[in-house]
Length: 302
Image 1 (cartoon, rainbow, N blue to C red):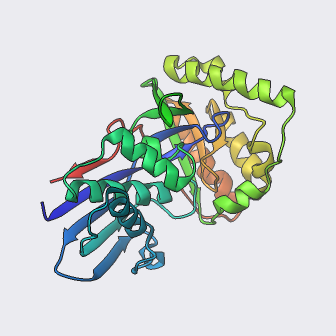
Image 2 (cartoon, rainbow, N blue to C red):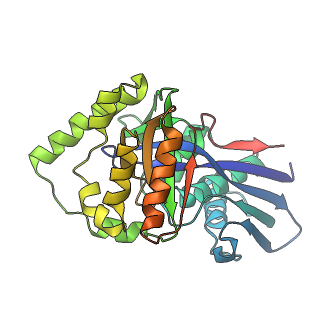
């Protein structure tokens, strides 16, 4: 095999109470084509914000590719890497996870598939630092990851009711993960820990059943959102607009700046329009997309 094309979905992490352990793959993608060449490294990038992508050895996709070959102890091949981007950078939709997963999966295919999917998931988590984005990007669906006993991670597939639409509102400003993490406290109270434990359990059941009352209550959190909301201009106004128009609730997608509303499919269009209007009224440019859960995860394109 001399050419491999890998398609990796965007992700939304945390979903409120599932901080650093819960994420879902979405129907928005980046594509990475790896072609063996005689020598050197050539990288091209097209699509949204492609001009900001490194075209040298510091490219995150290529760094993951190099780490893979270091791990398996095979010589690093010369490649051409062609990137097609639809997932915006630094917006809380897992763009770095797509790069890491894409690099590892592409390398695994060119090397003859020496690693299993679970081994790639653990490797990607090691590189990223936490599993909430890389795991659903690789495997698809809505996934909960917890530290294991006999292996590094136990990965659990969570059901997502077909009536629940994930609506992402992507503003035209960025929020770095480092900045979003810097505002979090070092310790939490017992009350906050209990609150999040209860609400994560309720969220899992709400996603499975589509129960409106459970989802409305479950989309609250005390671990990260209260500290990050002020970093996102207009957050409370957009959240209020989403709920008034019929959303179950709204949360920060990953570290932000994108926000995620969940709504019944019959309310999704009105929620979309309300969120867009709220941010436009504040003078903030925004793209609002009604998406779906990507069940397959990363795929190869032939």
